[in-house]
Image 1 (cartoon, helix red, strand yellow):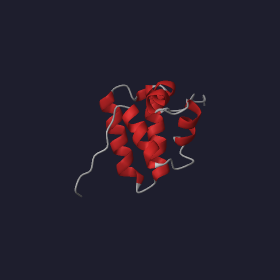
Image 2 (cartoon, helix red, strand yellow; image 1 turned 60 degrees about the vertical axis):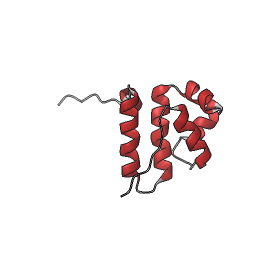
Image 3 (tube, helix red, strand yellow; image 1 turned 180 degrees about the vertical axis):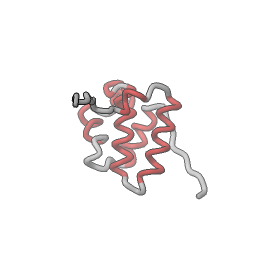
Image 4 (spheres, helix red, strand yellow; image 1 turned 135 degrees about the vertical axis):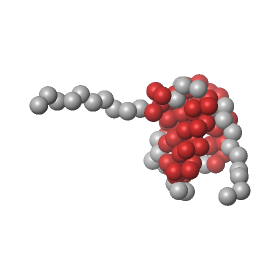
Length: 97
């Protein structure tokens, strides 16, 4: 039986438009169930799709700080999240449940 070749899936390669990025973030927020590190990781996926260097500049952060904040291994401060969301060209909003 021949072996099947596989490759690692990277969602950042599939986030091409601002609408796709916004839909992805919305889906992540719905699935996160309160896990802030998961949402930070999703923001990291979007930032990689847009280009980490540009997002870091637009957010006023170093590239290294941006990678650390969005690694999913830590929970960045809300002020950092707001800077990153703005740098991504997205905005957060609230709805009544």
